[in-house]
Each structure stands twice: as structure tokens, then as C-alpha cells.
Length: 304
Image (cartoon, rainbow, N blue to C red; front, side, top):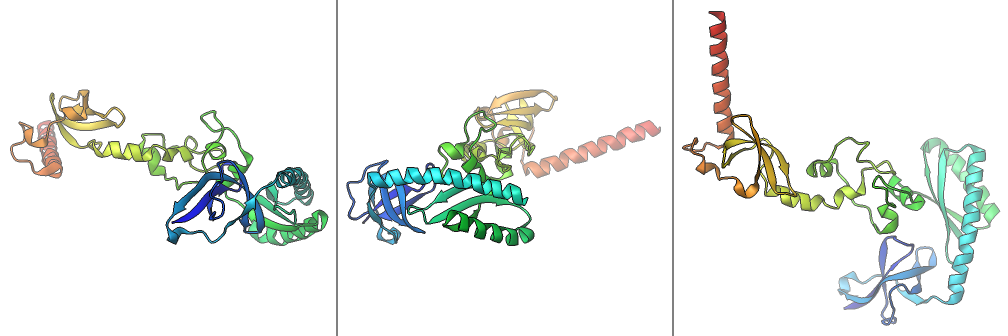
């Protein structure tokens, strides 16, 4: 087993494992210095040291514990990041660029500034952004790394309030984004109107995935809408399903709607009106033939 520690580079951010073979006594929320992509980086412990299989051993390691001076330097850099963000936003407005600067973040030594942004008009913006990047590097005396983010990550950086009236999930506890499909709303019997199931980021609501698996599991035990079922009050077709209550609304043959629990439904072979079941397809075909024959008789009666 290899000893690793799970850390986050930013609050409610994606977590990463680092080799911690010399730091077995680390505690949760402790600050460390690790090997980052752009040099040493300050991180916070999310999960104390634990063992993983050798094939999952991370390639980078914990360098040391963070000191008071490291934390003070991080606070100083935060003030510089705020000033850099104001400067970037001012320059973007003056140059009339179609981009929105969301965040500026210095690395631990302050030598590199990562700029997160959203933009449109790719062909035209590349030349203008190169000029802006060069001018800002000269003004801030730091290397500039431009990082374009997607809609969901932009909302995570800006924070806000969702349709539910609460702070966004992605800024409070949701570390990674899942793939959201419109079918999730259909499974939970929610409106499929995009305006109603779209978040502040302009994408489908992340919360559509929270109960999707549970609804799918419950729906498997229920008949499908339109299926022919047999109830204590006779045969009929399923009109609505209620997964959480495990009930269905059935339109009986006398056009009355009644609600039944899934345990109350009888197997098709117990239907007294069906001697040898040919399946739902055969039943629907027979019903269609009877309706066609009835229409023909009605038309003949009308013509005479």
C-alpha cells in the first residue's frame, strides 16, 4: 500500500492525491506545500493520509508543511489578485474586447498570474488578446497564463443564488460537474421547458442528477405509461405513474380513472377477459380491429 493525502487547491475545488510517505501524521484542514503544475503550491488537506493500491500511486509528493509565512504570503497575494482583476477588467472595457475576466490567481511565489475568462468571437479575439496579455505582463511584471473556462465553471467562480433560492451547489459543496441529460427531467416527471430546468450558468441544472438513479430504480418496478394492466376493478391502461408513492393511475374500460398501488395490480394471466394472452401488441391489434369494424358499421348505418 502507498500512503497518500487528498488535498484541494481551492475551496470546494477538485481533489487530488499526493504522495505522503513522510507525512503520516497530517490532519484534516492542515495546509501543505506540494509540487504543483507551475511550481510549489499551497493546498489544504481534505482527507488525512490513507493507503491506496500501488497502481494508483501519484507521481507528485508533499514537499513540506506550510508555515505562518506561507499563509501570510497567500493573504498578500489575494490583495494583489483583487487589484489585478480590477486592472484587467478596466483594460478589457477600454479596448472593447468581447470577453469577461472572472478571476486572477497568482502562484505561490507571485511570478505567474493565471487569468480565468469567458469570451466570444475566437478569430478576432486571438490577436487582440495576445496584445492585451503582453501589455498586462509588462504592467504586472509577471508571466500571464490565459485560461478560458466553460459556463458551469464560470458560475462556480462568480457564485450566486439558484432557482431554489439557496447558494449555488457548485460553490458550497459540489466539487465536480456531472454530465446532465434532458432525460433526467423526464424520468423525474419535471417540466422539459429549458427555461425551467436551466441554471444561472445557462446549462441544465446540476440537481437533476441528484435523484436520477433513485427515480430510475423506482420506475423499473412500475408499468410504463400506456401499458395494459389488470386491477381489482378490471382491466385498463396506465395513464400516470408516481414513483415515490409506488402507485399508478389507470384508466379503466368504463373511462374512470383510479389510483392503485403497484402491489394491487394483478398479473395479466389473471385477467378473466383474456383466456390466452397474446401480449400487449396482440391486444392492441385486436382492439384496433374491433374499433375499425365498429366504425364501418356506423358508416353503413348512416348511409342507409
